[in-house]
Image (cartoon, rainbow, N blue to C red; front, side, top):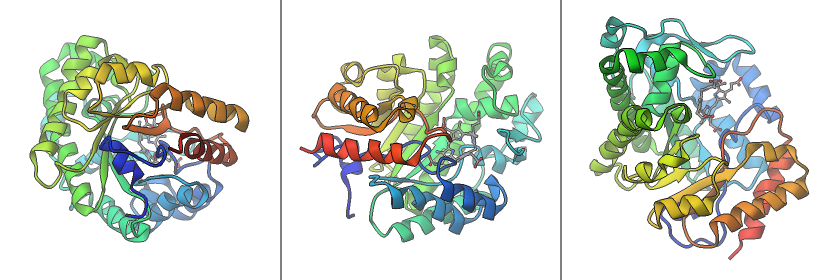
Length: 348
Ligand code: 1CP
């Protein structure tokens, strides 16, 4: 590996400077992404074509000195492979043709074969690894069971996910049955991505923060623990660093750390110094610049980068990232300012 500072930081080993990558680093803020997506015809056509998925994965690495690549795909590939009929209406978010609402709907769900229905994702991982040729490590990912259940039950994106929340109070056993099937699917999917060549794995629990503390523990944390336990019990995935990111759930960092994961994503509402105090020195932290800071002028971005670096301090175990994904209206020059500032200001 030519540049392994990302993997070293995840293992809390010393680094020459702080590694940086950005959630949603491939995406609509890049004109070359919009061109490749137009060529593919649709977002799902882009995801299911390993050559084009590889192309958009590499695009941000050509522009910026990023220390990791992330597989270009989506968290909703698993429910799609379960037969829910994912589609993206133009200019709108994801939608499912057959959402999961009843006991019969849950009973029908099977665990997808990662090298069967999801083979296109594994082919993309293999293609990207080959094309990266060891330049930087490749991150594989999946959605958390709770976050996937939110979309599966609601049938589309939402600000409050009223339907899955009603299900967890009205029919907790049914929600647990759904979460268990999804957790087993996520664990198999992540293990297959590692076997195909992913060198770190990340679970996005984007909607964990919608839950009150008791519900978070019962319906999100428990299944993140199931996934971490499964990956850490298997000799082929035990040594692949696992990053968990529950957005809006920073109060649960100690519980998340106790799952046995290697690193935790932190959103921008908590200082990294406070996050470090909560989890101790064994675990790496990933974050946590407010993505809106990318709208500020490059000098202001540089000051904010310095503040985030100082908040963690020079000790081992920090991967610089945003506290959530880049938005489509960000100027690519501002991303360059961020990436360069991280490396310059953290040089040991
Ligand atoms: O081109 C387009 O119009 C599609 C926009 C888009 C993109 C670029 C979607 C649809 N997904 C993606 C890629 C994607 N999604 C990646 C690629 C790798 C990278 O980071 O560069 C990743 C990691 C995801 C993960 C994802 N998808 C999450 C978790 C992370 C997060 O941002 O919180 C979630 C919640 C989704 C669902 C989803 N897929 C797409 C959209 C627009 C959404 C959000 C829907 C909503 O509003 O609820």
